[in-house]
Length: 247
Image 1 (cartoon, rainbow, N blue to C red):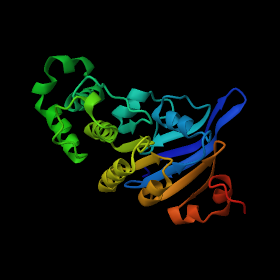
Image 2: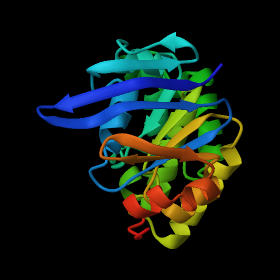
Image 3: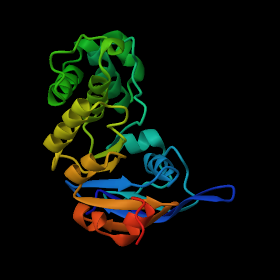
């Protein structure tokens, strides 16, 4: 059973075909990366997978269940957790409180947070374990606005992990990072390998080739190749369309 399957997924914006019959799979335990130039349709595809953008054609399946018409929060309840290209954090709250918000949102107890989230042993255990997993175990009470950019990225991954996901959708987790911060996130994702299937959208080719089991290349809304990192790196069509080489 595949963790994620898209079948001929299409999204049109007027006369623009943003995703052009995209079919791909993410297998259990796999890190599957999507790369492509700006304007290739990556953000649209992520929105379709998360349920934020309605597809015009095709299907999305999670663990053999057709979720094409399922809303975003319902996909989350089924185990889909995502991070964003621009961090979605409550900057005035602590790291711990941000993770607790994610836990309660996953359980659909959004307003319980204000009453007794810190007294909820189960929620606290999930939150503290997630923070420790991403290397923020000593920063429970740090205010998000005071944290470094890389730490905020780690926190966003902790929020995803605390929801006990079955599938991770990672939208450019290395965006805006220094080399050292990027290396830390790559090491974190490596440590999660095999525990969660991941669909990774990323511009950092060094990170992609270090992390991915398979890579799909999206150009003008269409997947032109899916292969191992080495296979993609040596594909003449990919090198011409994405790496800018003449073949």
